[in-house]
Image 1 (cartoon, rainbow, N blue to C red):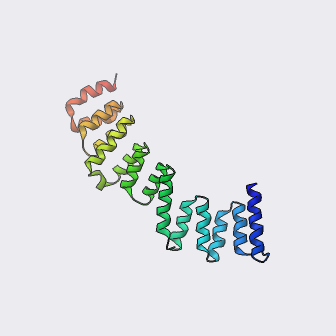
Image 2 (cartoon, helix red, strand yellow):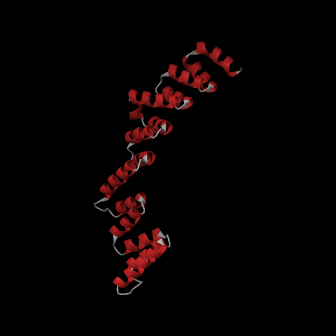
Image 3 (cartoon, rainbow, N blue to C red):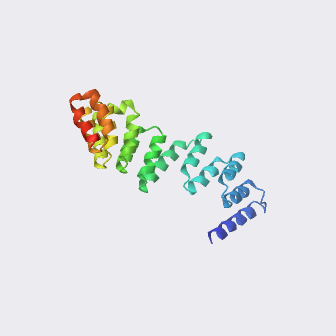
Length: 204
């Protein structure tokens, strides 16, 4: 039924365009019907109809493509589109995708917060360890490490603590996660007195 209605709308559009199936709007709609969205986009853009190209993608929730068109054509509403997309993700409880979007926009701190909210502390940690400025935020580092421990991701928590040179907590995490090779390697550098005990655990 949906296809029949869409074809009816195309025929109606053709009649409005003086019965012409060669009109660019009709050709674009036919391309959409055939799921050839890039072809439809090209048809719209070749005829200077940026708004319809954007609206096509928005109506299908293909927000990345809509924003890409707006950016390439320097559409005045490009920033508004970005804000609308982010609000839609939050309103529809797509927190992980919202985090992906913030990361793509190079908004690392917001992405970390959203990944943590989505119970994806490993992604938060990966971003954190690649951002020297955020790694200087001890409170943030601690929050992410605690989230990792709660999720039983001891090795990654240890990596995070080691990255900020909190070697005692790093060793504890490596031990809890039975990551004895990392624990022994770290102990040799920072706590030589613990090496024998750790090695004995490793070889049990």
